[in-house]
Image 1 (cartoon, one colour):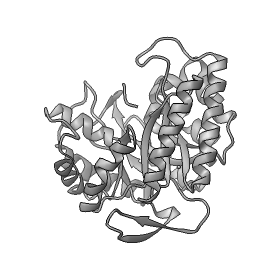
Image 2 (image 1 turned 180 degrees about the vertical axis):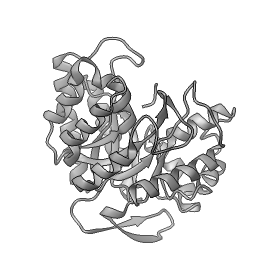
Image 3 (image 1 turned 60 degrees about the horizontal axis):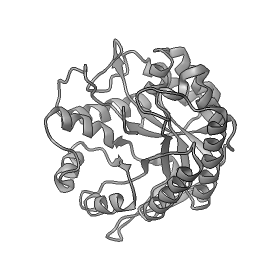
Image 4 (image 1 turned 90 degrees about the vertical axis):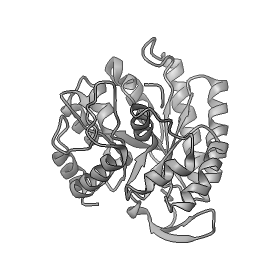
Length: 304
């Protein structure tokens, strides 16, 4: 896997599109979104290239009825490319995902500058959550970060989170599976050595599940430990360990119980559909139909 914050000062915020149309939305009513990675995997499976024609891509996205889009942005120019089509198809940008490298001093500073530049543009669009997953030393395996590198990473995430907070948004920490290796030392170090008001948590439910050797206990324990820091969920389901093409609450992860626990804990987080295809996934539906099903299921299970 090679890819791979809400305004807290006011009760209401203004979503501004590039055509200067305004829509008042509350912090607790962000629209359900879909992450860009889903679309990349579906397009790849069908022999198409996501992002080759943004007009055509976001036209198809809009047909799903999903109102929010969480793109994986490289830089501010990437966001600028999207703005005319987000406006054209009335798609909101409550959050965006951006990669970063935080365990080396010079690269961390470059990542911070890049993210802040994107954030400045995204704020004008009403973005409230910036999600980042710091890169591992090597994608697909290799050595884990040592203690000095972990401290460098957590320090820079805290610094960036403070600056993002001062801009009226929230920075959310995201993980894949590698952060849960070696007793989940990277995962816990980041969340134990940053200030909750600076760095929030985007819980990618299935990566917690897969990274802990397919453990539902780990999913619910993580919810218990860090629920107060969660500002968004990435939602994905699998069956017999393989990602399914549509979200179903009854699969490897008991999302019925999960949604009930979220409600009981009073977690009011942004819901982001990230139902992707992987090599062994069986595809039954095209990308639009799959996301229409996903939206309905997520709305139903989370009563959103």
